Image (cartoon, rainbow, N blue to C red; front, side):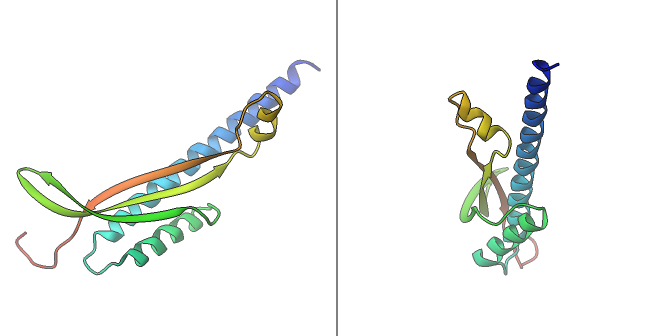
Length: 129
């Protein structure tokens, strides 16, 4: 029991830490999609998109930080070219449980940058396009 319990606890903490990493990764990807949906509106500005993404992330429980980059772009589909906006979201995740233990064995589970990217076509205010 004295030998196996610490190993089982370490495995349990690793599962919890990677679960938190996966949850935060999904929040960052969803925030990028939410930002791209917001950026597709004809009246939205880059500041509006950045505020919407940050609001989504804080509402989802992520601490403040990271960055949001909005880039105009184009893409082609079915022989036509469309204007779009690409939203890149970057967030820094600190490993809570594995960081101190990995240091004992020469590892570096301190932090990782999570990123999400989404692109959506701009909506137009004219009909027939």
